[in-house]
Structure formats: C-alpha cells, structure tokens
Image (cartoon, rainbow, N blue to C red; front, side):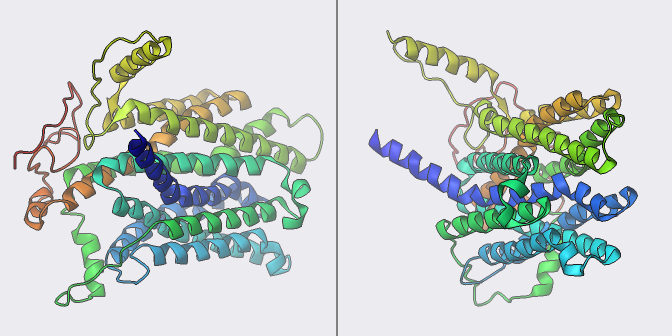
Amino acid sequence: GDATQSTRAAELAQYVSLTIAIAGLQFGWSVETGFGTPYLLSLGLRKSLVSLVWLAGPLSGLIMQPLVGILSDKSTSRFGRRRPFIVGSTVCTVLCLCVIGWTRQITGGHETLTIWLAVVAFYFMDFAINCLQASLRAIIVDVLPASRQDAGTAWASRMIGVGNVTGYLMGFLDLVHLLPFLGSTHMQVLTTIASTVLGVTVAITCYFTPEKPLVRPPTEANDSLEAFRALFTSLRSLPLVIKRTFRIQLFAWIGWFPFLFYGTTYVADLYVAAHSTDGGSEAETMERGTRAGSLAMFVHALASLASSLILPMFTYSAAVGLPQQQPGPRSLSVLSNIKRVLDGIRARLMVSLPTMWAMSLVIFSLAMLLTLVTSTVFVASMILAICGISWAVAMWVPFSIIGETIRGVASLPYESQMHAAPVSGDYVQLSNNDIPMEVIDDHGLGQDADPQPVPPSTE
C-alpha cells in the first residue's frame, strides 16, 4: 500500500544519505591506490622503496580504527559521537590531497624534498582516511537496527563501488585537457576533484544523519587512560563471531593490500613489456601503460559495483532469516508467473553471509594464482575484473556480520551482555533472537544447512 511504499522510500533515502560519504571516501582512496605508485615513481622514488610508503595503510588501520572507535564511543560532544571525528578527518584528508597534487610547486622543484613531502602527505592521508572510515562505519552501526545492518552495509558496498568506478574513470580520462582550470597536471586535477567530492558527500551525511549526543552518568568518570586500557582488554572479551571475523580479515588483507596498491602498476608493467619495441620514449610508453592499468582497475570497479547490486539478493542474514516464499493463487498474468518462477529459483540459490564470504575468498585466491602464468594485458585485466566480485563481498559481508553481532549484544540487558561476551572469549547464545547470526556454536562461525525461520523468543 501507500504506507509501505512511503516506508521503503524513507529507508532508501536514509541508506543513501547515510552511506554516500563512503563513496566520496572511496573516490579519494582510489586516487591513492590507483595512481599513488606511478606518481611516486614519477617523482624519482625507487620502486623498492614504494612498498615502505604503503606500509602506512595497514599501520594506520591497526592504530587508528580501534583507537577512533574507543574514543568516539566515549565522546560527549554536543555534535554527536562520530560527527567530530568525521569532520576532522575529512579536513585532514583534503589538506593531504592538496599537498600531494601540488608537491613540486610547494617545494620549488627540489627533488629530495619533493619526495619526502609526498611520502609524508601519503602517510598523514592514510591515517586520516582510516579515522574517517572507522567513523563512517560506526555511524551505520549506531543508526540502523540489527535487522537492517545487512542492508546498510550492502549500501556501503555499493557506494564503494560507485566511488571506485568514478575514481578510476577520472584516472583514465585526459583530465588536463578536459578540465584545465583545475590544474596543470593530471594529479592536480584528480586531487582537486577528489577533495571536492569528499567534502560534498561528507556534508550530506553529516547534515541528514541525526546523532544523539552521549550523556555520561554523573557517577561515571571521564578517564582517558581507561579508554586506552579498554582497547587491549576488549580484545579478550569479544564475541567469538567477531574474533573469527577479525582473524579471517587479517589473512584476507595480506592479499588485498598488494592488489589495491600494485594492480595498476602490474598491468602497466605488462603493457610496457609488450610495447617496449614500438618506438617512442620510455616515459610515453609508461604513461600509456598507466592508462591501461587505470582502465583495468576501472573494469574491476564496474564488476565490483555490479556484484554489490546483485549478490545481496542471493544472501540472507540471521537477523532477518531465510525468506519464505508464500504460496498464492496462480495468476493468469505471464509476468506474474515469470516473477514467481524467478523468485523460486532465487530462493534455492540463496546462501548465508558466511558462505558468500567463503566463496568470494576462494575466487580471489584462484585469481591471484593465475597471475603466475599471465603475460598479457587483456588476461591481467580480466583477472582484476574477476577480483571485483570478491572485493564487493569483502566490503559488505564482514561489516554485516560484525554490525549484526554488536547490535544484537547491545540490545540485551547489561547482565546478558556479560554472558554474550565473557572474558574467556567463548560465545554463549542466550536465545535464538539474542545474537543475530546463523547457528553459533563452539566449533564454527555458523552453519547454514537446512536454515529455518527463526522462531520468536520465549524468554
């Protein structure tokens, strides 16, 4: 009815406004991952040292994300818990992007100083991006109930796809000729666009997403040192689901980091090797190779965006349960009958979130093994495109699992929370509705064999 359509429209508007800043963030990050390596090489940094620059990514993630989570959880700012961190990290990211785009102009062309300034700017930007990412992910968990966490993180994955597609498309285009008023070099125009997009999208999220300031009880002291102690003690008291999700992420990102930072360079090197005898200068050949790499990452981003739109239709979360097809009277309409058949096929193909994640990791592993026997730009580009499927899942499923678990625990009484996440690290499910995961036990993340609708709690 009209009320249902109005509710769906309101939810859609909330999903878009809540996650659009992630698209802006991913646009800015695609500038770093897709074009940072060629840019640093063009400044004169040796290829063997570039990997030390990208150490900033995992280092900043290890430090900033849990730290920002702890500090923002306890923030009593009148602007909300997450918004001050979102705005502050956005300003820092924009400043770093501007420094990266105009590094040579700032240093007056001094080669060594230019390299050092660019490296420092990339390091600061990595820390700012991780702060922003942690805050934007946390606000999704804050705002949406457990039953909508999967949809919220699926929308975040879609926004990541949109940010990647637009970012890599901008990198493939000849921006200096198209937008000469934004800068005299490709990197200057790219960083200007990225800064603008990030600022606008973050403004939309902050304006349309209400946050309730945290009111600290008068008896509770604001102990900053306690926040840092909680960062380490909480690792021992996390629910088993979250612990195992973190372990999988640890090993998965050992593969994702080199893929993201060297994907463009990998294709560019194959292009240069295949066209080294075509004539022309080495710089021109490398520039064409970088564009070929940008095109390959653009195809990867398209595959990721398409996957983020399609795959959520074939997965279910425990917070919602496996959708049950309701039998109804047969319709004479051909379209209605076709829809019923397609819904039946979709219901048979649906898998749980952990199963979808496992399948995507297998695809990513096989694709990486294929790079050992790949020597052409076309095949390498197809490998990157296939990885787009896994990337869409990586940006969606782990956050859904964690978000559902956190919201499930947070909805319990305080005493029940202590049972749900005891210090020993064992995971205790108090009732079918307490912790919204598949089937949690002491032996695995979940089981999705013969899933049944979750019955109402009798407690």
